[in-house]
Amino acid sequence: MGNEANTRLADLFGLTGWSKGELARLVNKQAAAMGHPQLATDTSRVRRWIDTGESPREPVPQVLAALFTERLGRVVTIEDLGFDRRRQTAKKRADDGPPWPPERTAAVLTEFTGMDLMFNRRGLVGAGAALASGTVLSTAMYEWLHTDPALAADGPVLDDPLHASADAASFDRYEAAPVGLQEIEALERSVEVFRAWDASRGGGLQRKAVVGQLNEVGGMLSYRHPPQLQRRLWGVAANLAVLAGWMSHDVGLEPTAQKYFVIATHAAREGGDRPRAGEALSRAARQMVHLGRPDEALDLMKLARSGAGETALPRTRAMLHTIEAWAQASLGRGQDMRRTLGEAEELFVSAGDDTPAPSWMQHFDEADLHGMQALAYRTLAEHEPSAAAQAQIHARQAIELRSSGHERSMILDYLSLASACFIAGDPEQADTYARMALLSMGSTSSHRTWDRLREMYRLTGRYADQRHISDLRREIETAMPQQKKGRAAKTGGSRTTPV
Image 1 (cartoon, rainbow, N blue to C red):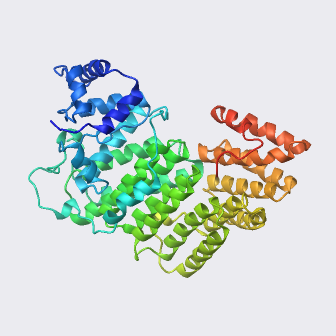
Image 2 (image 1 turned 30 degrees about the vertical axis):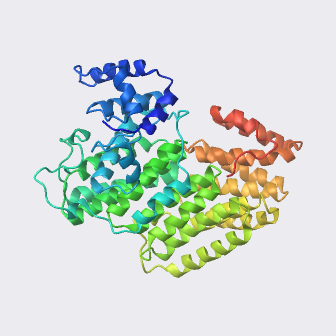
Image 3 (image 1 turned 90 degrees about the horizontal axis):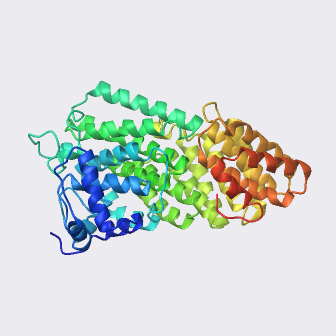
């Protein structure tokens, strides 16, 4: 029994609206449904879990995770509830922080994806869902990310193929089997297929497939492979986790997305790929800017750039610079933004074509460079209207360079261009580009495009008395998904959220 309150469990319990007696009854009922009819708990035991930090025996933590996940409408893991597989005290757990050992990364990955698949089918994000701040993430991860990873494959060989410190009940032993080079190569090819689909159509339609594949890889990682294969398998896990996170962000599952970005960072580090870990953190930074938290995005970008290390290729560093510039633009720091974008251009040009970019950087090409520059200048134009002219130049270059298979990016380019035209006082051109974006939006499942459309809609307010803009506003209101229509109607006159 512990001697300190389990504050994590207490906080989540407070969000559910349950009484302690009700939770005890639900645990017994859920346990029976999960094949444990002998389990019996009561109000006093629930009180001890919360008030004294008592850690229940298996399968109670799994039962509780399932109950809280369903109640709150988001994935809640065993560790989110303040329990871990070694039954440490609350104080010890609080001191552990993000530096997970490899077996814990595999366990968290498997558990989180499994819960996501089972309970988050409708994409609900309950009142208890919240993002950790960028400062919390970056401070906790800094020292850990800068140390050399200790792969499980480099540790002592155990008789049990599962890692001794991971709870075997967390894995499906049928799935925990060795894989060979051909299987890993097939998994790497599947990542490319998922990545291409996401770039073209958005994250909604393939998110569950990616999460399911990641869940399978988590099971594979619980088995001890030769070091070279284990590292590549960690690389697959990192790539899939980034995709799962990006797709979750793309459809508005923000806390779920952040969890996947953190898992991806851990997986990349275990695979010895620090640049990949930095890129995963940069996704979390982009998410923060999109949600109107640029200060926290800059915290994460400092960690992402330093964590990527000297082995990061110039093109990778250029991409990281563009995200930092967008965050600076959101804060109105025009001078900093221009300097950062200038460094990004220099890095991109210096990359040349001699050194092939890693697979996860294939989609950051010259079109993407201009697209991010357009977004940064368009965002700065909210503070400095003169920046809208430069935004238009970069947006047009991005559109001209876009290749097929990047429909979502093309839509975002058109929205950047239309928004810049509205800010620059050219509603006729803006109307043209806005309609071009509208033509393609129905073919994607990206909520981010609708968020950007809503921001552009806000800019139409000052021209609402013009006939063609009035017609455009009605078309946007008609096309907007139902849950966003009310928000669009309220943003006609004033800016409510950053882009």
